[in-house]
Image 1 (cartoon, rainbow, N blue to C red):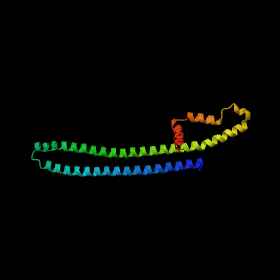
Image 2 (spheres, rainbow, N blue to C red; image 1 turned 180 degrees about the horizontal axis):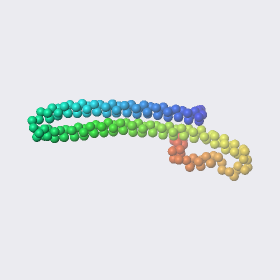
Image 3 (cartoon, helix red, strand yellow; image 1 turned 90 degrees about the vertical axis):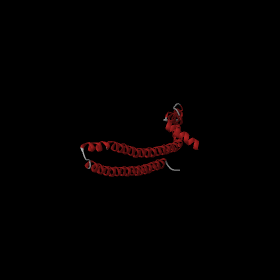
Image 4 (cartoon, rainbow, N blue to C red; image 1 turned 60 degrees about the vertical axis):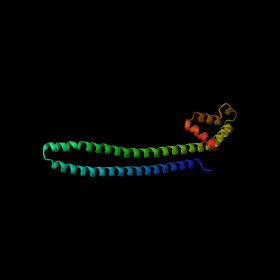
Length: 178
């Protein structure tokens, strides 16, 4: 059977591996989002340049001031539509990246909680023989005077009852498995 130190070391290594894989996944998602964002900006710049070139030709071909201002005023609606489209696509990129990050963090937190509960349950099982040994040692040293003191096993049970709910549930999970 592995020692407590080995179990804690294995849990720490598993946590480190989990963090590294999470970081790699988040970096991939960030690069993907940046790629999509740069494509959006390049397409917007290309479309804006083409539209500006077309409008400049139309304005240069205007025969009088009235026609010039009519052409200029007609460009307000297409420009505002492009701004709204840009905002829509930008929000789409940001929300998909946010969704991927939240999903990954949720999975990692659930996995970390499961591993922590397993570790606490294993440590709880490993602690029981230690408590019994300490009780026997105190009984042998204290002799008759130890009869008035509460037993270490009872003190350990009281500490378990006073423990936070997560720690108590780890013992219950382990008891159901065993």
